[in-house]
Length: 418
Ligand code: ATP
Ligand code: MG
Image (cartoon, rainbow, N blue to C red):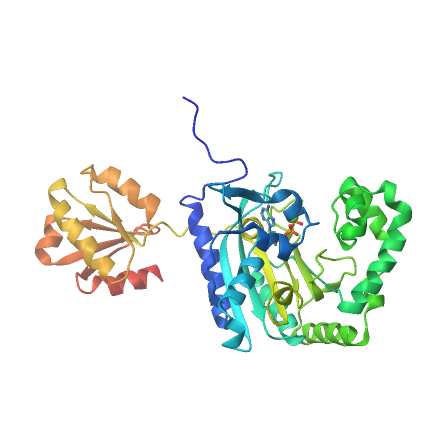
């Protein structure tokens, strides 16, 4: 029989690796709570039209990366390739703008894109991201970038490059687009096939292309920052001044773009330079999209958001010491004491400790081996201890022995765990 395996580009995340994921997600949730963001959990499947309209037709995602299927011959559905569209849909569907003037949501979960798999590039991958609706910036823009950089620093990911740009809005975009097309047209036949197609549909995408020939041509393209109108310029100046005041390092990158029409003003990307990232070094992408909510049929609402790839963050994070699967491993000196062991475990767990035991009735030696693998502390339950109502706690790293009453054990264990 043919072996059953995961779909190409999709990964199992299993213990002990999943513990790192938990730590990362917990740290993200803590950061978001500190900043007053609440969690949004939209479905993983949405009507295809949502992504086509919000991400845009002439994008890699919509053109070739979506997992789209027909639901029982009726409706076209798509596994979400990103989180911003679903949040915008939910924001509109539940008329959130009528409830509060400013909305701050975050999300964590799997995304699906049919890309060519590589290290740091998968077909199911996880993003942690956030959206902030109702504040036109520039202060929330700077605050969001600073929040992400601080979060990365807390994870030990310090060697990053923060790139910021402004795409302006309305008129800026129209004038820049014209200048860009005029610049690109003479090179049209040297561009990649994708870029040739996009030249007139979505010329900003050409600047974003990963094809080397496109990148070379993009080098000489007009600088969008020179096209900013007065208000756009003031906005961008204030984002930069606020970041500077916060001491958040960044570089201005005029060629950083997102080729969607509704992207406006502030745009940013954070790249990692260390760790095991390799070519897939974009850790986080984000930007302002003051036009999207209106585009999807709502009232004009300014918004800004970002998304980070969790697999890439884990590659960029320093290795951490394995703290063990549980706090304490409880051992029976003889198989007849297993009932007692179960009871000791139950009481310790009730006090909030994580506790495990090997209840198969094996030798002391084999139980010790499992204890050493799984916990920093061991408790050996023998007839003598049961009679005296005490527990012997062994610190497995320095072999020191400590005794406590059953009631006093949790406090002593906590002290030993540090
Ligand atoms: P890239 O340029 O690497 O393709 P992107 O511009 O498509 O990235 P975004 O859509 O901005 O990425 O998504 C935000 C983040 O999600 C990226 O910075 C990256 O960390 C992560 N990401 C995107 N696509 C993948 C993928 N296929 N596998 C793993 N992580 C991904
Ligand atoms: Mg991509």
